[in-house]
Image (cartoon, rainbow over all chains, first blue to last red; front, side):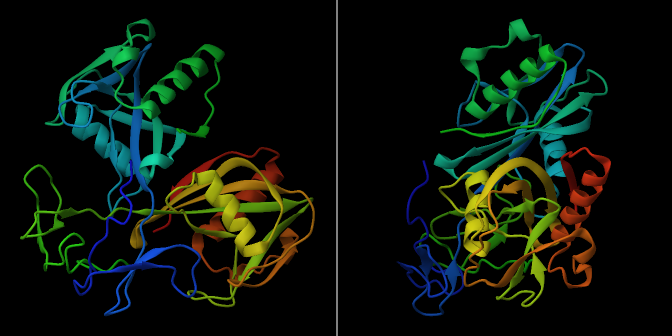
Length: 181
Length: 181
């Protein structure tokens, strides 16, 4: 859950901020009473992939909190200096060491409660070599009937996986936008 | 252009920050030497719509900087507490006062230089009533041959409009992901 009023001090001058609605705005912001800097906070993007090898999808077991020990698709925060696609690829390399080719954007899921938007691309694995990074305990391929549904780390990952298998059954892969309450 | 090292002070305690790579990270962050808060900065989302009425699209002439006086699709920063779809709808109401029904996600464009991701939805106008807000000088409908291509405020808007008219000619609307250098 997002902590309210988590900005206590001005990033520009260090003064304690006030919370008020700036003159040309309609939302409460952290405003510096000394230097007038207005601090905006906006949702951030988590970008990742659904890496596919034949009938199998690649999942990573998390070596970090939150959800240590649970399974996820490779994904992480989009960084400044990279495109959405580059970020999704980077996370796939960092977390799984997988060699993939990015395909279409597949899910865009707003997670309002934590101020995030999760974007997953389908990705074609070019080989089965894996080299999990320090954030991953193990990475392995799963057939649909093997997916550990009760040990999936995040609801956006579950929804993306379900949508993937639904699409594959229907023979048509379509973008899915939605929100996770 | 993104200003480097624009966080000068810790948001938690107000101390002057250092820039260094935290132990479990691989990127330089603003780190507080007093309370150890790590400050992450990530790309933010701009969300908007391509409002369509018959053969025409709706554009808004900007009453604010940057690009005062130039034409844009209704769009703005996604706020905490709303989904991507809700943000796109809100901006369409705030900037144009248009009454629309959201359709498919249509473009996802990374603008790395300024640390933004722009997401546009197609939207069906339900009537022609418009009520531009304070950020808009005027809002009006344009046939393709009337679009003021030399007075478009942002490259993501130009690319989204070009993609829209290309799709309409081809008879098939498809999601376009890309980046604006």
